[in-house]
Image (cartoon, rainbow, N blue to C red):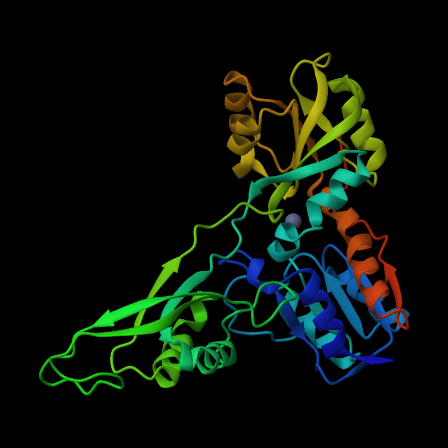
Length: 371
Ligand SMILES: [Zn+2]
C-alpha cells in the first residue's frame, strides 16, 4: 500500500505538469491524495468500459492519457455521461488521474513509446520545447560580504543547477564610487572617490525567483546602492517536445513501413493507411502520437521520409503531398497512444514496486465497423 499522493508524485516527476500545453487540463480529476492505493489501471481513455474494468478489478487509481474534463465544467451530475463516470469512480474509491500533453512533451513520452513500438530509434523531438530560460545575476560586493551575500542568494533560490546547489562563480576586482550629498555610504566619505576590493558574484536563478532574489540581494548587501545586473539567458533546445524523429535500422518501402506500423500497433477496425508512393524508400521517420496534423509543417522541415500520426484529413494531406512533403501514415488515434500506457506503467512500477498494475486491453478507439 502506498498513498495516492506518492503515486501522483512519481507520475508528475516523469510527466511534469508544467510541460502541459496552456489549453490542457492534467493531473488528478477525482480522488483523495491521502487515500491508500494498491492497484493501478492504465488506459488511454476513461470510457465507461474502462471505468467498469477499473472498478471490477478493484483498482484504487485509474491513470489515463486523455483528460475526462478538458473544457469548463458546470456540473458533474450523475445524469450526464462524464458525471456518471465520476460518481461511479468516487463511490468505488478509485481516483482518476490524467497525463496528457505533459506526457506528450516529456522525455520519454508518448511518441517515444510509439516510435519504439514501430521499431524506430529516436534521435530527438519533432517540435522541440526550449528548456526554461534562467536568469543570470551578477552582483559586485565588497569581499568582506561575499560569503553572506551568496548565502542570502542561495536561500532565495539562486544557485540551483540540476542536482547541484549553491553554485556560484566569483572573481575579484576593484569597485569605485564617489558619494555625493545625500548619500550615506557604508564605506568612504562624501566628496571622496573610494576604491574597494570587491567580488563579482555570478549565480543563476529561475525567473520566478526574481523578486525573492532581488530582496535577498538588497538585504545582504552592505551598500546603499548595490551594483548588479540580471540577464535572461537564451532558451536552448532540449530533448523535450511534441513528436519524435527516429530512424529505421534498414531502409524499406512505404508499403513495408505501413505493414510494420500495422504489426507494431494494436489492431483497430480501420487499421493503418498511408498516403504517397508505395515504393518510396523510408528510413527517417517523424512520429506524433494522437492528432498530429498541426505538425505536418514540422515534418516537412525535418526532411523525414515519412510521418506517422493520426486523425489526418483529406485537404491537409492532399496539400502536404502537393508540396512534396514526406509520405504520411495514418493510424487510429488510440493505437498511436496505447504504447504509452506500458511506459507509464513501467514508470510507476520502477518507483513503487509494491503496487499491482495493469494496462487495460480494452480498445477505446471509437471506430467499430468498416464497409
Ligand atoms: Zn490523444
